[in-house]
Amino acid sequence: MDRIDVKILGKVQDCGRISITELSKHAGLSIPATNDRLRKLEDSGVIKGYCAQLDPTKLGYGISAVVGITTLKPAKAKLIATLTDIPEVVECLHITGNDSYLIRIYARSMAEIEDIIAKINAYGETRTSIVLSIPIERRKLVP
Amino acid sequence: MDRIDVKILGKVQDCGRISITELSKHAGLSIPATNDRLRKLEDSGVIKGYCAQLDPTKLGYGISAVVGITTLKPAKAKLIATLTDIPEVVECLHITGNDSYLIRIYARSMAEIEDIIAKINAYGETRTSIVLSIPIERRKLVP
DNA sequence: GTTGAAACGGGGCCGAC
DNA sequence: GTCGGCCCCGTTTCAAC
Image (cartoon, rainbow over all chains, first blue to last red; front, side, top):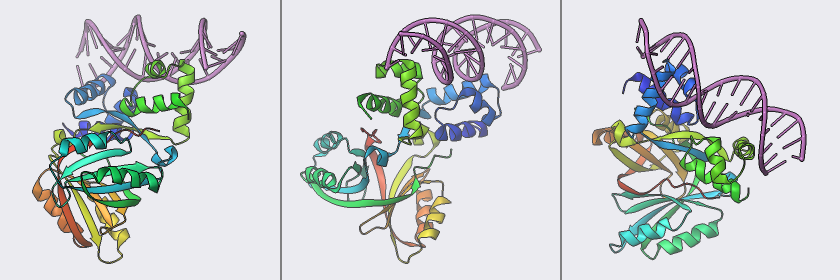
């Protein structure tokens, strides 16, 4: 993992569909060498995969919320199963502190948020915060 | 935006580097038709871009934390600038509720977390939660 | 929307250095 | 690690339906 690998990782985090030819120019290496490095980064699991980033608002998801969950009883498996069944729940973190879980929701309306919160309240208390804006958007990792 | 577009969006969210040929098979369309649809989804901004997903632990970022920030004075611009200067801060949400901001941190050690918290404390109170695990990992959006 | 053909570029592989 | 050559596959753009 040298500076060239860092360059490659930085580029593919921004341009996931970049061609090897283009990537080799940015890396300052030949095409075969760039190809080898990229494949090694993929095979070693440093690169877990590639994905398209969608614009939630253009899909109708105008509202996003963060919900802290304080579980009353130990019902972790059922809670996670319930959350997994709700496609609007796009992320769930198990955390330390007052709240046991922190989840991220995308919704089309406040009513949808309310429905989801109601489902979760079967497992504990919730504290819901609406996302007003995203000053820093999912920055890339710098190795 | 019909069922075929939904199929395409689902696939590129999982396999960002999929070829048009492969994508056309999953979409059940011809290659030119698939190509047209994908380009329209990109041009319209539904697809914002493509990115590689890295494994933070394999890069040495063994610890992740979530920090709620209650800003004391209106110093939003300076706070965001400070956060942007810290590469370990990978996301920042402006939210409603007790906390004004919620940020996500990747760090190599607890000491690094402590350092970052100290910098932020110049702008307000912080409540830090360590991420124990991630039961739901950044699920794809379903249009 | 489809098919088919043609042109182009890129990827994968090779041996040589 | 680079370079050059090679073939194949995929992409892109046509035309025609």
